[in-house]
Image (tube, one colour):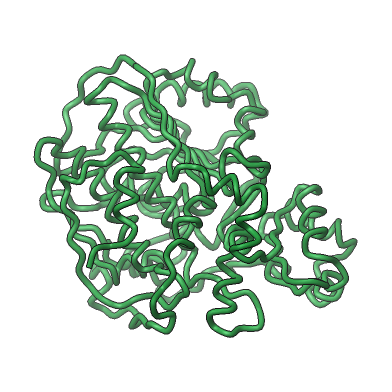
Length: 452
């Protein structure tokens, strides 16, 4: 059966349909939406982009295992002999308000402080539950956001369609893509390791951007992740640092800013997931970046789209699910008495593989046409893609992972042994492999490998 997402994805990303995508495996993640089909398609277009870059005249076929793709959307590994830190802090979660539901996203210290300052409470979940119940969802969402926090009222798909930001997202393309002429020296490509030597400056965090750069690293890219001194995401490090070197810079420091300028000038790809105005406020807006490096592929994403009133709003996958009608649809589909999210952070993962495809397509265009690409995506626009495809059977099941789904070799890490799920993408003569193990943030020098 034809994957329902591919007809929209190939033209949105500017990909040629010459690349064949074969799908194997069975099962579906239980959802009101076609999450497994989305997972399969997102891996498919990212793989197709690599296949076309590796062999532009005759791309090799790409095989996607839909079962493995589903697992990678949830977690790509299982710890052996150790436990992951909690995914959520003690306050984060869904709360009933006086007129509906709201989600508070409080994993970051600043976001937790903002929400609690609005509620005038300490980090006591019972007290938060009682206080939230006295607010209207819309008013509390607005107050938390105004205080610098992250919150989302649960809206129906119909309410989101009528909301100014939902209406704006509905008119946006899946990928905003622009090109500019640039000078670029010809570079040979090894079909077995097609992204080797491609320098990726990774300014992303939880979770779409790191998913993209992990995919790029799988095919040889030199991914250098940069984090601020105060940022951490302990529950996800074994997931998002695979194949990367991680450095730290404080862009309030002049020496660090000069180092950052040098990295921009040297990179082939700049991948970033800050809010739409964040780099601008730091003095690294689009014009400044292009002046430093006219030939780079500049790819970014945000939570709530690029044209509506929320384009600069902080957001995460779970919040977009609440805003866009996904959690409301799940609640009604399953007859639940509270928000029912997707069985995975599917908006993050899908957007991540779309980002990776946009990066590789940008590399192909630069080589073939001498142009530099700017591409922008958003979790909200990916949500719209998914909302347009309801599941025919929300009661489907996926058998849990077995030994056959796992890479035989155990990975070693700082925290303990890791059993990694097999990668869903297979291409003849072009195997995914990561050159660096998972690790902590800010443990490498802020230099690309060839410039070290």
